[in-house]
Image (cartoon, rainbow, N blue to C red; front, top):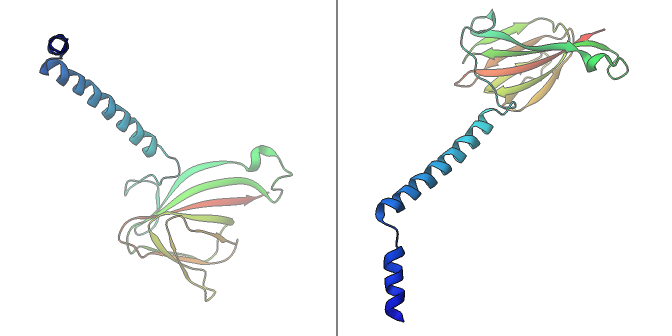
Length: 164
C-alpha cells in the first residue's frame, strides 16, 4: 500500500519546467497587481504635479504662475457665497531662493503649499514659514512677500475668490 502511494506521487509530480511556468505566471500576475497599485497612487489629484521650468507665465525671476481652473462660484448658487462671483485657481511655482513681492493682493484668497518650503511675510510683523500641506489666507489689498527657502521648487496653490 505504501509503495502505491510512492508510485502515484512520482507519476503525478510536476516536472521542473511545469513548476517554473507556474512561478512565471504567478510572478507576472503579482507584478501586474503591483504596477496597477502604483498607477493609482500616481494619479492621486492631491499630489502636486511637477511643472516644467518654462511652464506658465513668469512674474518674477524664478517664479511662474500656472493657471489651473476657473469657474463660477458654487455653480451659480448665489446664496452659498454671495460675496464671490468666480473662483480662479493658480499654482505659483518658485525655484529655490526665488522671491516675489506683491504690494496688494488683488482678491481675498486661500493658499495651500503643495510642495516645498516658503517664507511668507504680509509685512505686519508676523512672517511665517509654510511647508507641504500648510494652508493660510490673504486679504484683498494686503501685501505679501514670498521666498522659497527650500532646496527644490515650491508650489503654492492659490484659490482666488473673485468678488461679485
